[in-house]
Image 1 (cartoon, rainbow, N blue to C red):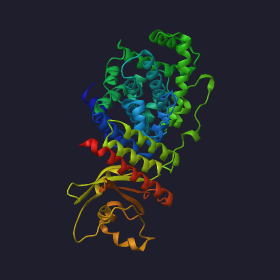
Image 2 (cartoon, rainbow, N blue to C red):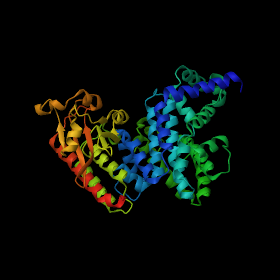
Image 3 (tube, rainbow, N blue to C red):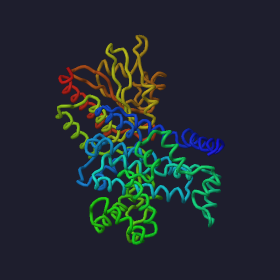
Image 4 (cartoon, rainbow, N blue to C red):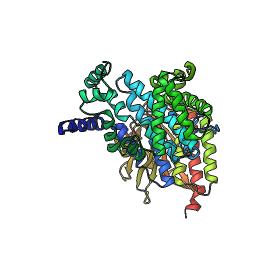
Length: 483
């Protein structure tokens, strides 16, 4: 490849990474760089997911699907999903949802929809075959299969005029895909995939599979066969190509071709449902199903923009709190994460935050936050005591009491509506409550619905207070263990 063509490929990589998919790249880095320490990684992964209500709902739908949870253990929280399914499985879900989000917001091209459908279908088939064959890291196989045509997906999503030219050329007879790509772009889309994977440092297996497509490595072979299957099934599940691939997969797994065929059909159904849970309803609709079935409805896939109050979820999270406190390895951070999730998802808030007093009790700093704009909220929720300045939060910490702040309706609260408070959290109504451990306030919770502008209510306030009280009781219970 000459220098001008290499520059063209580099330009595409830079454009996709920096202009078109920066959120996906950031999410990838967040997830991939999570600490190896089990407790720390669980909490950090939970925060990556919980900052987005839509992603949270989709992860939990996936976690409760038959595909991921065949024994139907009820999973109500992200932390529980990590315990039941494992860190790598939930991380895989998170990466997959972030990827699909990047593409479903792009241009609605038919080629993008078909390519995304094939990728999800191949990934679901590959993970199941990997599990049946007993290979290491089936989730790594899933991600590698999902991203095997990442360059094609990114190109068809963001290509603009170049996409129109390539699409027109591909429709002409006499051009192979490789020839058309070189004619329009000067490089192959598989090279774009390799460059993006290298740029984002996603998956070592994927790098190997891309470099050595004819590798005898078992995991690479599974990926290749399942991509071939996903494409062949578009011509019908009874086609000669599908029959041949079924025989190869039967030989690979040591199962009968009839058994494998049954599993492949079920995997296709699972893939359609999973694509829908990812948020790719159009791709879900074109995944080929046996006998023209349809398994996903739009009603199933609809998700609220913000968490809605859910009394049953509150009870399940409170039960999980009790179970956590019974464990010998109970963790301070995990307990607070679970309480925050209870307030955020169970009580139905837009933003939820836990702040901790500094040892000298002169400072109050945000430690964890969930919901929309959590990073900016964490940055602004920083307070230092000043003798001449009233501060609502220090007042509540010195004389511990929960408060429903609504100065527009409660005249006595207007003195607390200071510029400092407005800069930190705004002046929309909010709930706040100190965490009292063995008689001493050590920090507080904050929650509001400022983003959705939904009204606060008495029932939500009682639930919020109850979670704050449980946090204090739980931390008091853990305190002797931390000495």
